[in-house]
Image (cartoon, rainbow over all chains, first blue to last red; front, side):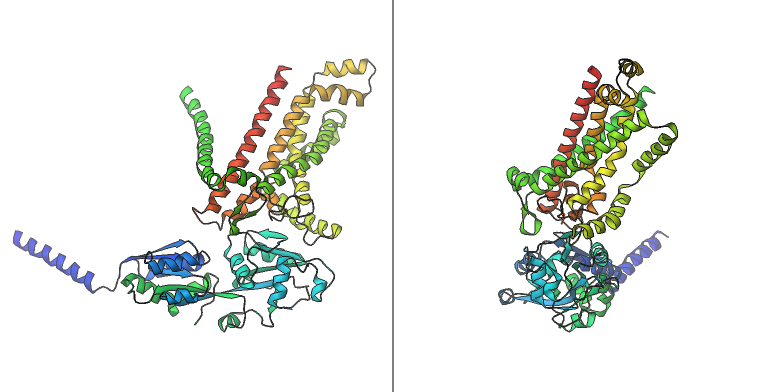
Length: 269
Length: 278
């Protein structure tokens, strides 16, 4: 009887080992590091990835695109996160870009405003305070109220970076959320503001930039210019760990599209 | 039983200590990194450019509070005199509940009304681009501090012994002279306490003024958008990265605000103590 118990126990142990080996579950830790603007997208990706691979832990630390890229080149993290395209010298050092999402920023005005098409220069002039009256842009004689987000907001840094007005904007008002910007633009005929494309609704009108209206399609084909890529960066010649490869594959796959859209970005493929 | 009461008292003291210690610990590092002088007297707050000067925030808080006091105290004081001395009973019974209702309105509602009524009105009257301004914040704050000023001053005025007023009237003074020359001086410590309490409420308010002030860290100017110490914290907290200098600097603002409130509390205690000694 005793012998039988031992055999049974041994069989159970072997069987469970067999199950563990044949299972497709991977385990491990993926360290990602970089762009703070990608926090939302990373959060959504991590969450849906966890459902698929519960044993893999994805760590995210928001340090900025530059330090994320240098992190992956130095080998201090598995995947670097950048919310801008890679520079030539970074690619020369072996950085490889995998674009996982696109982020479009819409420039919005009150629906009663007649301005419907602005150039990038005009937008920059408005936000830096060179142009202060709508009449200078062919509109009515009314002062321009420039609405923006607070320092630290990803939308703000994206907008200022792409339009080329980093740190030189003179805002009339600053708001703590995208909804506040849209709500206040909707209630003030003089106002202009910016918001993530996914958050724009019918209470405001999104102006054409250089003749192109913002939409998921124009962001995807690149004709709408106020946009930036969300990039996962790896190093050429370095093999990713099994867990990191699985996460990168997942983030670039069709399965991630819903999470990326839910986080307010555009799925690129 | 004694133990239970002592324990309850200690819990309160414990919370105060906990908050104080936490604020000091989390507020000091940024001040150390930025430099006390640069932090307190720097004229630019731009976290994106690593500039953390809170002079515009401090001045805005002081100007805003001073403005609210300048508008709120005269109105509040005269209302209190009216309620305590002059008002017919029936009128007083309408005004008094209105005042306590005003005290009970949540600050977000003040902000909402300010945002939807006051700001657009200022925009069209003064031909401003937006209307969110220090002026709007001062008006909202002035209304918000009215209830505490009115009810405290009224209580103080009513506590003045009847004999004082009767003596004054008997000497031939008019009613008006009696109220302002006899009753008000006799109630001065209570009225001063009301003013200090109003200052405390105004300087600590965040929600209502965040909705009407515009929140750009400009040097204060009546018609421009401004940022207070309180709103400076709440507007940037969401998106500041944990452990970043920006987040730490926000705690330092909290520490400065805390010191302001402590100062006001100390002033209040002094005023009340003097009143008792008189």
